[in-house]
Image 1 (cartoon, rainbow, N blue to C red):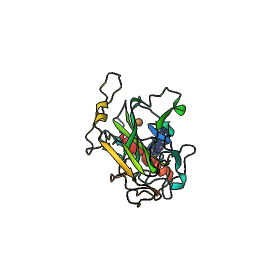
Image 2 (cartoon, rainbow, N blue to C red):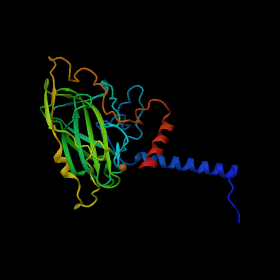
Image 3 (spheres, helix red, strand yellow):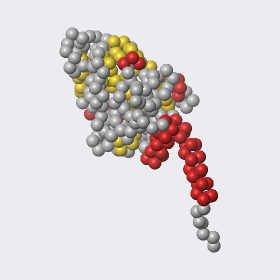
Image 4 (cartoon, rainbow, N blue to C red):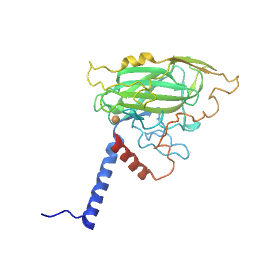
Length: 285
Ligand SMILES: [Cu+2]
């Protein structure tokens, strides 16, 4: 009987095999899942999206979930550092944003929420909810898929974070969140009333859990959306003192205090980051 003894040759061959596998897997992994591409999710590489702010890099993992099976991968928005103000898309209150998505895998669609923050991502108010039908896209039509999101016509002016949240129907229990930095032109001060977003599938701090719902008759956790508390955002007008409003000044990048990685890592080469992303995805997905 011959026993296997690692030689220099077999060791090298194994290394080469590992490298080949990694390089083959990276494009597949990056294209999987789904991210917000219009308006540009932070550091999204989609056509027409601005370069990341100084010190930040393109998020090659823009499509990946921020929560998986109760584990927190990244904070809400993935990163709390907004795009520079010069690159914000301006919308008027009452406009409809034709939101678009970089769809790698749509996981059978699911529930989506779109929310706005005027205070640097401390307070959110939901402006649209879709139960089950979000991202139920016909294969082959992904690039043309749009979801219209109406900005209420009485929105106050301000620099606004526009967040998309998604609970996928099929697969690992995931929470997706991408944020776009926009400018809203509306009334001079005012309030936005609505519901706070449902945050689920996102660690022990959020007890809500949306189970998998591949079939039409499966329980889908939609009743959880009825538990969202009411929230009112007050935005001061231009004549008021600046406190509590993001108008004219950069929102303080507070965001979440959850540990984050990925797009907030400013150093390191894109390739090594890609490999790190791919490796972490491959290990944990
Ligand atoms: Cu996915």
